Length: 104
Image 1 (cartoon, rainbow, N blue to C red):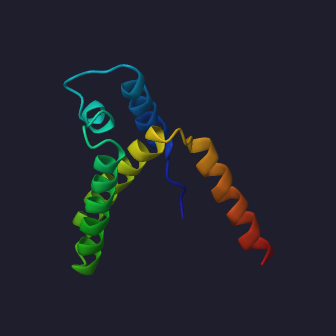
Image 2: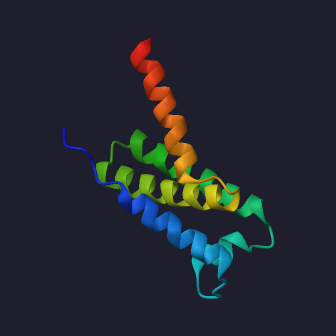
């Protein structure tokens, strides 16, 4: 199975970080990061997209699974950026888990 080019995750994350540092009133990311509800708004979006992904899977709708999973990953990236968690940290954790699975 060919490996997917996941560099888009880095590019999207970099844009989110830029929006975190450079407010733009027209930016959806800026509106999320600066919402009056604070982190709760981001958590609501992650929860909403999680449920929508679950429903797409339950309905066995491949196109919706892809779409809703993309929304979920995007909002998760916003959550990570808001909490100063880097993709390098996530990659390191996944790599460590992979090595453990290989040994077990």
